[in-house]
Image 1: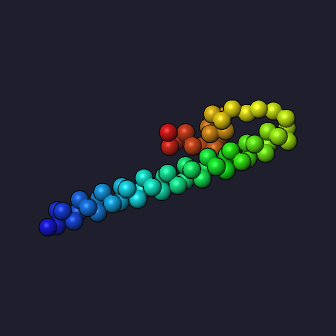
Image 2: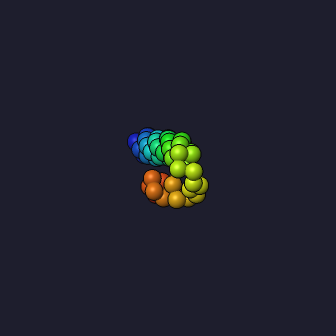
Image 3: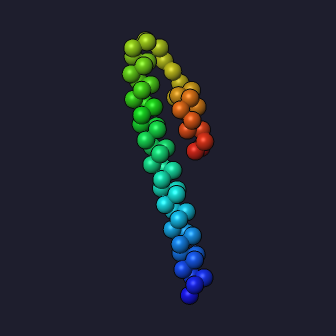
Length: 62
């Protein structure tokens, strides 16, 4: 019984960690997209999304 509970807790912990990483990634991507569009429209330039993602540090999640 103890081993079963230990495995369930371990799996649940990993699931919640993955969910929190996904939430952070989505939040960063949304904020990056908004900032990128705003800055690009003010400067009249086009910035690749890959540059913005690397700048904001989301390459860690990929």
